[in-house]
Image 1 (cartoon, rainbow, N blue to C red):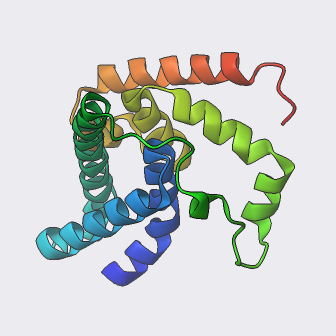
Image 2 (tube, rainbow, N blue to C red):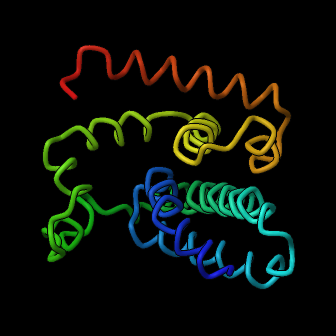
Length: 172
């Protein structure tokens, strides 16, 4: 039963982690770690609890990634380890078959939306993705984000406003 839940959740969870991190590898690691923790610690819980628990674990792992990344980037800049241009292998085209998601990206709509979501502060990203993409209600989102429902409402409202402003006039 939990396998079905994870299979249904993995693609959206990956998307959330990828938008937050901007790295395919880091996003995969975050999702995998969150899934493992859910299975190890909460598999015996009721099915209705898995969604909010999984998203709370996922968001916690994303916040941890941000903390580690901030420290790592600070050390790199301090020691001048940064590399210009990134990894050239990341720019190679994918060998996967083209599906509906890839077609949307090719059209540019998803790229614009991803970029706009990526520019949001982390808490606004989390609130937007959990409320809009995952369909969690305010209380479930607050539980997943470890904050109050009022904070969720504020972050979500600010995210919507920023996205509207950012995408205004864009050709979607």
